[in-house]
Image: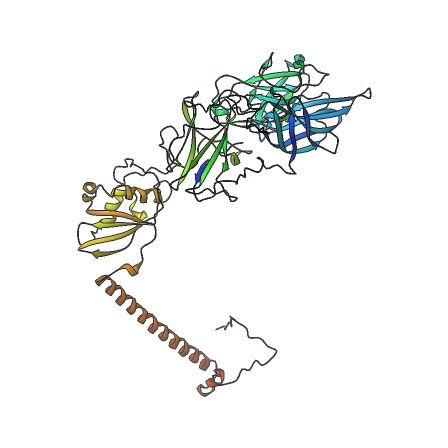
Length: 597
């Protein structure tokens, strides 16, 4: 499930670092590969040593690249598309009842970057598993290579009486809530049960936290049976009678991750086939492929490249756009931020159509801050916020990025005050007054000017400079009353509004990134402060001496009251005596002796 905490906090940790040399997601195991696969050929990418009768696909990451010829031409490139033509499937091979060898193929091409999550597969018999890759390109010169990471979990057979279908594709591969019309899920059935017989079976979505075999659970949504499979869908098996399709329309409130349950019409319980994530928008997420260090940080002045994952994207000149906006702004109205202009030149250039499943954006930040990523699809005609890839996982999905800055109100009439962008972090504010003294109601005046409760304003100190009183303050905003950092930035934003400031007896304002130091005081203020500190030090020293003398007298009085003569008191204060402990003993530190009255 997706949590859209999608901020770029410059110079701060924003998420897991992504290395262009690695595969995402970070599945366990070693990378397997197949190189230079020719047009029409099938290569084994990964072979599993253990035979299984049921398994779940928990993680898959792969990357398909084209081998550029000596002429510098990409012969596998499909014009206006970012995808190459290929099939990726798990091949299960087993021995049938007649002693012959049979194989089944389960497409997993859409498993990465799309909505299909953990996949459950039932096999007719214990089978040998392989990941196979087929180059389906049209150009005879096309050579494709693939790198892959995969995690499978072995299971006992799922269900009692039937071979369960396998979810092999989603159309579109990335299902998002604001897509007009229906989305389809494609299932592959065994030879024993043709897809045409399944129209009365029940396919449902339930909450991710629930279980498909719990008969007390009320399904959230039901999927409708479709008689035909989309013609443009590429499947590993040519015999489409083994496939069935279910359709559903998603709405904005459906954003989230769900378990997909399948129940045959004659059965009383359902079985889980996998998980489906419904994303908030298209593109569904982004990741960094350049500019992020190993600790997940990006820096001002360092080029960055973002890769957006979605469906039917458009990089033509009048196509999609992207921008950074401040974290407290809406994507619709927020102006481009971070010193980065709105991007209208996304790559790869001149791609569009259903098979354009990613776009790239390269930019360099010029100013620091916290931003979110916004994307404009030409076909959708609106700006949407795009979440970061590391926020994908079980849990609730929201479409907001962070807690918004509280809108302050004036203490008097409670009217809302304006807020500003957080450009910089300040710690102290400085006010130069028009008069030579500090008014008794100065805190109340600041409260009215800054829309901050008076109790949240602290005057650090004040001094007279060139005939004007100058005050240094700190803000301690709490709860929904205000945001200290935002209010400091507001102070900076009004420094040129002299007419408004004069109404409050203020001539100039400013903000400091570091707290002011007392050593900066000059003249009479320094002299008064030094004299006060000297007097306090002397009083403390005399007080300590008086306290020691008093305690000594009390101790002598107590010893006399316990029967010691005054002349014997010297024996209990061996000031000139050698150490009585001797070797082999240790002194006891911080010992406590209790004397009862």
